[in-house]
Length: 347
Image (tube, rainbow, N blue to C red; front, side, top):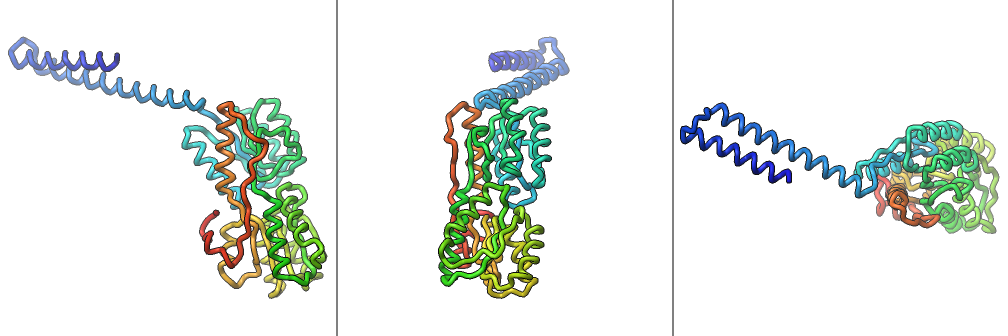
């Protein structure tokens, strides 16, 4: 209908111009005004068509949506990559992502989630600072009717979440332990730097310990490094003063392993194998150097976790059924295969 009106207006404008050319009594000014009016009408029709197209696109996708995002440590390169990939995918659909960083403080994370609820959310991508401690926030989200896509680290009570997407963390630790057994067949003293409040790290540690069980290894120290480089460096410095003969150190994530590396280098160790879990660019650079005590990392893909999480969220928004868990593969990266994955980004 708009285009028929437009065509009629154009015809009227052309008729006015012809009358001027035939001496029909209208002057040039009237002709110009008719042409400008037709042009303005055309622009208005195009603008309305565009607006209607955008509205139709939003209606067909069920949006626009506003999603929340929270992770245990927003400065960790692993989570920086996940947040960036989720944001890119969400904004590409014309939707909004509200991100927060509790800096490993579960009390702050609960407060931030409550604030996001007050702003209005259609769903939330959630990685807990503490598996148990986050439960008050899960209660608040449940009461507000906000579906949760739990990623990377499971909450203590999975009945609260719509679904989970994360790495096979047990296997990530296991492949490190299996590699250590091959390279140290006689066993020896080792240090384990874990994080008991992080289910993902607990799973990795269990996988590592199961792989080395009965292989002659003695755990001379096992402490909570909180998944943090600075914390792990301080702990490792103290432990290495008493256990400078360790053959290996296992860190629950790559930042922990890098902290242990700094401590081992400061202590002058030259024959200690250090393992982490993540497959971060920093760890891969150490492996590629050929001169580092870093021996391997149980690699995961934050990009795959992000893509899987976003896909699940939109299925939930569309009312589709999803499974309880979606595991993402993990694998070992060492100096022998690091070139396959590169050192300038995540796999």
